[in-house]
Length: 243
Image (cartoon, rainbow, N blue to C red; front, side, top):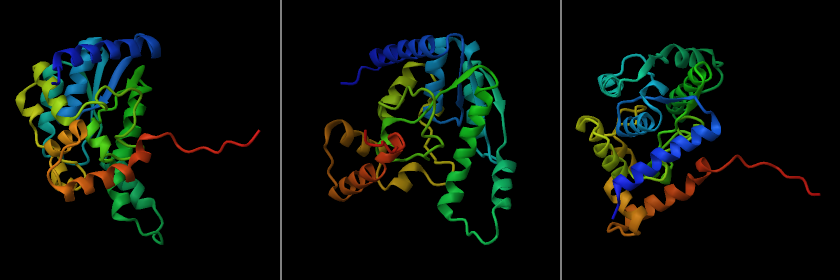
């Protein structure tokens, strides 16, 4: 029952309204990975604002085997782009952490996306920009993002759309199929998203929208991840003194 045309048109108007209210004349700045989410978000921004007001930032960490997909997108949309290699920044932080502090694997894994977000804001604040978050509902539902990394931004066009819905909009926007259908890889540990999650996005999307799922073990895993990671979508708890 998903009406991709209706939702796409509404999202374009929403982006325009956001910029009218939060920075008329500003640019949309977003990280470009070459995956469906950054591709669709960038294409929506182009339709809403025009290609001259959308800036892509490619942020490889050393060598990125699929960076050609990111170049394909910026060339397809004809948007300005910058390439910022984050390897030195990541290595520099790790190198300067005291020897008596053992860095966990989780810390190593989440450092690069946090560096990328810092990079996006550095670019954005240098070119009159607003940072576009590119997370979708499916990823957010199970916390498949890095807090203060790819989970943040100034506006979020895809956060209420499942993976399947994002793909439908991507086709409607005439993006190359290779970008829409690219197997999502987290870019952190080299595995696909679905390998890490333990279920497919198709299963997750159906469960989110209908509550239906056949595998009860996967249902429990999804429910557990959803509850455990809700804090990523909430404001930081703050103390309120009594009056």
